[in-house]
Image 1 (cartoon, rainbow, N blue to C red):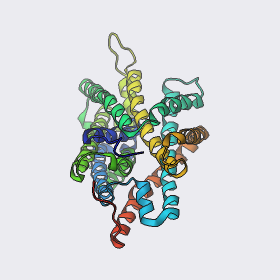
Image 2 (cartoon, rainbow, N blue to C red):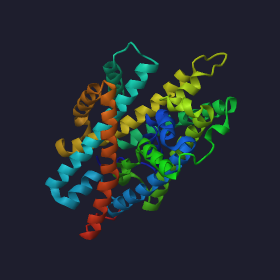
Image 3 (cartoon, helix red, strand yellow):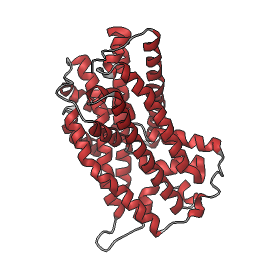
Image 4 (cartoon, rainbow, N blue to C red):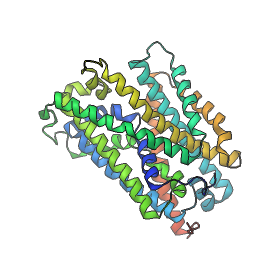
Length: 365
């Protein structure tokens, strides 16, 4: 993909990262952090946001040394064609597996809340076919689509604010540090993996217009908005549900909305799920695009469109195979470990390696 023909603005870059970060995890996040942090779960989310920002700085520093290269090209410049390709395929695997994990969690929720009689493989196939239509486009068109769909994000806030105003009991979060700071920090680890998506900077950075400082501000703003949104939604659930209730409710946001009705809308939770589905689709598009870019570079002379079939079929097989609860838990563990390695460990090692051996990309851009 030629950079000159597919540049995006810093504003588009911000929405690209923001929409990638917001995904499946938002529904179960309050339940997950409360199990460790109790009433301070929203503090765990804020700590996770700070940790995300620290990781973003390392990713940005790596990209700053190779401003004209994607992660796949950076690996080749650092380790040569053979080793760089092997490591690049690891990132391809990570992107496609993350796409499959998104489909697994999405189909699970849809099957339980909306379409209990519909086979999961049908839901998965519909999402893949629909999203591939956009994923085969270039980064500029994808970024424009993500900007357009961002208008739905304020609905999350509006529904949460209304729910909190109708039924709120702040006493539920006290004593604030009941779990202890160690458990609050443990809760932030769970929140961190629900906020991933900022690692797409490794792919999109060379396509973004402007200087490195402006790019850092754009991705930092995206991370800040996601952190505040997740913290607010978590806080809302914690002050609406009692401690014992939220421990047994896997998707508290949906249960919270299900209890409210308007004169013209009976099931607000279904409206919310429809809007939430768009955010899931945008995350899936971003990750599958990352996988297709790698496959296209290594096997199709840079044409990621030719890799669409391969990426879609692999993603479908992985998602359909994880049909039982124990396999879903296995996928979550693999995702957590893979994210830790590919987002935190490897980029930090690459940055250190580039400084140690004084390897630096073209800085003309």
